[in-house]
Image (tube, rainbow, N blue to C red; front, top):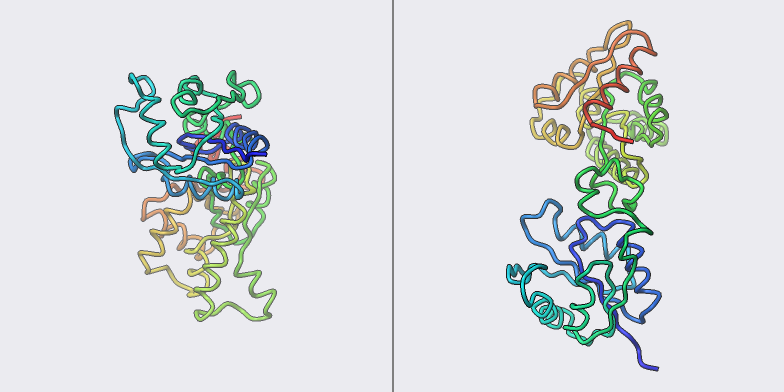
Length: 308
């Protein structure tokens, strides 16, 4: 029996559950599936990242990356499908038997390619979402974003505090995960305090922990510490490394400073002041435990514009 080849073409900006259904359909139907990911350098999600996502999501498919700009091949342009068919033949270098698509261009494109069109959820009733929907409001459409893609959209919140009480309450309140203090994990496991010699390792491990947990986060990822806090507590003074502060500010969308009833410690003050001077979004919450939790919840809802 002859082996069959199918193709799925798109920008995948980003890949979502609808794409996942479409490509899995093709994989169940054909012996070989080619995913042609078409990207341009000025798009909001890097093309190389989209290709990485697709290769991880579909390891048995062949992912081909096309970066050619061709304004004559716009979907509404005359002869666009023939131009695309020619481009596909060049990129894929193998005959295509089936074209899988949910878009209206599918039949004409398949005809131009000399293949058979297989419609998959053209009414978008199985997975009612589009990539543009997700780009416009990723938090609202979170359930349609695959785990591998979620770290790109997850909002990161660092809690600047002397203990983990506030971060634990917030993670529970928002139904998501939290990244604990890896410096504490290191000390507990090794029986020794973190030293300057251990610092590069601990900072890298803390970042790895956050990045791994981001795949399991539900819209938000809370962190019980951050690089500035780790270095501040280790050194016992304000952080003078401007690059470290800049990288920390770039990594988090919001910093919540826990000013307990007894007042913040000098480490909390030093850490929060460092990121605030560097332009971070900083919210300070004070008062009783319940007052601080409520204020932090309101700040997160307002600052990160969470939607149901």
